[in-house]
Image (cartoon, rainbow, N blue to C red; front, side, top):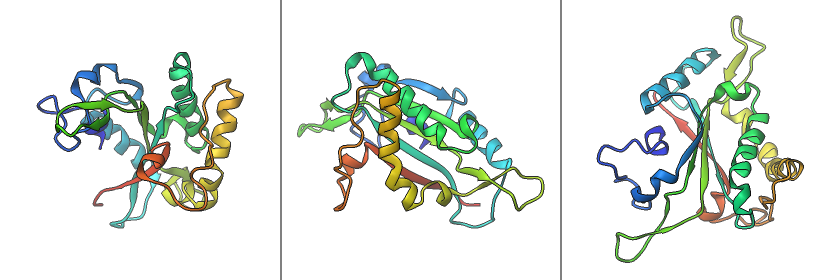
Length: 205
């Protein structure tokens, strides 16, 4: 996942996602990247994880990923500010703050492949932000934090997410609609969920 997000491809192209246009990858940029390679970034993630108490179980969540898509009504001159304030908002929800975030990449090179199977129609720019789900630990000696993705992604928290996100952007002076009401009641499409979705990433312990 880290390799994909930083576009670390062996042959310059992404075989697992044909919607990536290598010609546009030069327009991607980072807000934070804890290393130059996927290995270095993952080593930073492991370092933060070692500071946290964790249970030795196979379904342990080691990282969360949030995807924020640039709203259509955001003025072009506020694009970077939108992503920066989205980053700041997400950081404000994390007990460990910046330290647990190991990657925040803005992609401008993804879209939809045409029927010819080659041409990629440019899609909306979006940010991939990945973090270690560290929360305060008051039970285990020697640890200030523990791994617990569930504590950060409970239904009650996610239910308030877009409202708080919109308020944050409004207070920052960013003209962008992230709370449109389309995610309520009846579920949403994958495309819509890219406006702000959470992906849990697990690995064998």
